[in-house]
Amino acid sequence: MLLRTRLFTIVPAILPLPALGFAMLAVAGKVLGGARWDELEPVLRGLPNNVTTEMDLELWRLAVAIRDDAESYTALTTQDPSRLAREFQAGRVPARLEAGLTRFLDRYGHRAVAEIDVGMPRWSDDPSHIIGVLANYLRLEVPDLAPDVQFSKAAEDADAQVARLVARAGARSPLHAVVVRAALRRARLFAGLRELPKYQLVVGLAEVRRQLLHVGKELADAGILEQPDDIFFLDFHEAHQALPDHPGGAVPDLRELVAERRAAYEWEVGRRRIPRVLLSDGTEVEALQPAAATASDGALTGSPASTGSVTAAARVILDPVGAHLEPGEILVAPSTDPGWTPLFLTAGGLVMEMGGPNSHGAVVAREYGIPAVVGVADATGRITTGQRITVDGGAGTVTPA
Image (cartoon, rainbow, N blue to C red; front, side, top):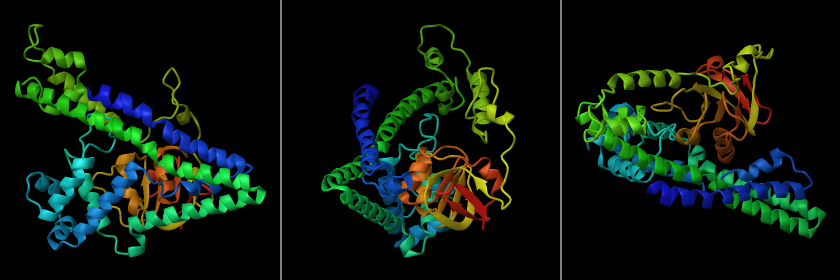
């Protein structure tokens, strides 16, 4: 019912708006006589109406509130996130932390890392990741680097770039200036909505997960499954046959089948790299190519994703859950999705192994004004935590500092 009445009506209604925003950006570029991407890209910084950005800033505001409460502050800065998550679920954390985290999860608890996989626990199921991010935020002590300040500065920089582009168009004619101003304003107004269709989809998937877990619990209580979340390793036909009141006769023992599928799933999740191209016979094209060479100065190359340059210590993170990221460190990751973005607020830069200039991590880095390079082969293996590196998001290079 939720999928039919909400997702299948809301998502198609939303999609044209961000498409219009990016189309208006292209129109402005054409009217300007073919503006370069590095001139248009700053317009997309600090975008309004981005539900993921709003989520991240809401989490930052919670961290600010917690900083003023000694008991909550001590709990977050001294306890392991997983342990504190269990204490929170048992109702044994300081009152301000409990109230703030409950309020955040009421609104965003349906989200998760790798959230389009209904088998992944939601933040409301296990808030360890969010608690770890809050602890990271509390380490930020430089006011000018506060995420809300940085986001406001990004929005101001975008407005300044719009003004410059409008002035350039005005040098051609007043009509050119009017068209460019209108196009860029609409680009900023609508482009941030690109996150909303995915957000609505995840709302539906969270409800699907909740309903499936009801079935899983019934099967686990009947001894057919070991635990409720084993349900995610069955298809609908197998789950229906396993129900105790199914008229099909003897109920099959699905525990061995689930164990085999869980093992295969965990092996796949452990992959360090996903092939971008596979031939019909299973050949991995990239594996046949010679290994990417490192430049004489030790530079790694990738695709420019977000302009700017930063030199700082690297932090290699393979799984964001419980990750420790000091403010200003450069995040080096295999790839990212919306579940990673709370880490972006205090990151000094971003390096990703996978993805292109339009991948999620690249787009969000541009909005936050974080220098980023993506598509850097084996970045998490060739860069080590603590190593000082320079990320040049315009040139698409990562070099030892």
